Image (cartoon, rainbow, N blue to C red; front, side):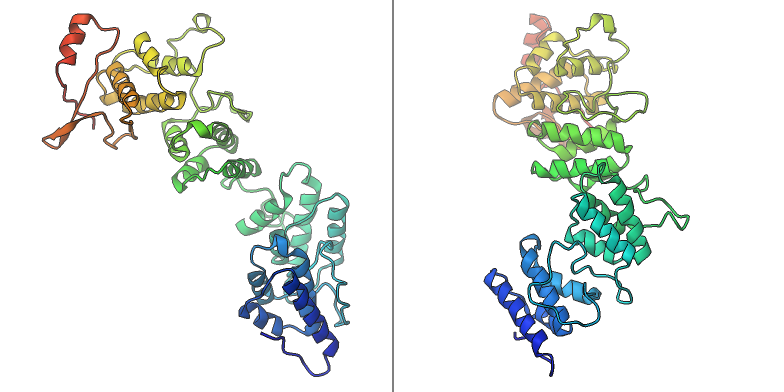
Length: 405
């Protein structure tokens, strides 16, 4: 689709043609909607937009959509007065380039000064951040940018902070409203960083997990995210792990309500401290995560203690499976008559390659013998290794029906 020229605007039309050719040479083809949007602009403004897109197309996920949306919001050129724009004069290094500001206003001197300061400190704003600032009144955009410049050393991603703050609804402090930092019920910068770090590992958590994290104080949510990020290869379902851990009652590694340091791979993030039944003087300092978890469960008043033989059985499977098995035992503890049998049955199934599905409370997960009766699965019960030989022989010869839920 060719650009439609206006009479007497030959120079501007030539600049547009040059811009379109630059895009074509860069391998970018604009769709009809983008061309229509450009046709709605004066030629010199369209040329300015094309120069910007040509120089930044590698950073734009969809150049055509960027042009269409920017024009629809009200494109304001960097240069006013309608002066002809020399081809190539527009530079992507200009931080306010193609900044979509409200249609009734040009960027103020204060905003230009702040953009210059941003360049001086080496802070480059993304297109999303520039668009977000352009959607604010100029005094609010200046206030937000000034705050970010003051705190840029503490912000991991200033551009993301600007975009997310505007998306949540920026309120000016100068007007007596809420301050710029996110409100307490919104994800903090640290939590947003934790979610981004988890996403970079290829893990996407579901909405239930995000809702569970939202119920925690930001420092606790960050600690949980750090643990999951560092241990995601051992977690069969990170989303379910987060949801179930929060539902049980997440206890940070550090007590006293102070912000918890990221676990950085610490093995026990998310688990409660040792129970009252474990005296610190009787517990070695080099306690393994599995040993600590067993001690915690034994302090919770299960129908029977997890014995040493059952602990050894847990060591026969990968650690993540052992931990998930103990999580399931904790969730179902009230309805499991023999935790040792439950654990050893699960380990036996895993070793036979039959898989294991403990499931959350109410899921009906169990270890089935392969037949049903009266709508209830017959569950194979394995003897605890610590039981006497005679009792073990009797239990091995029979199936025991057990109502799980």
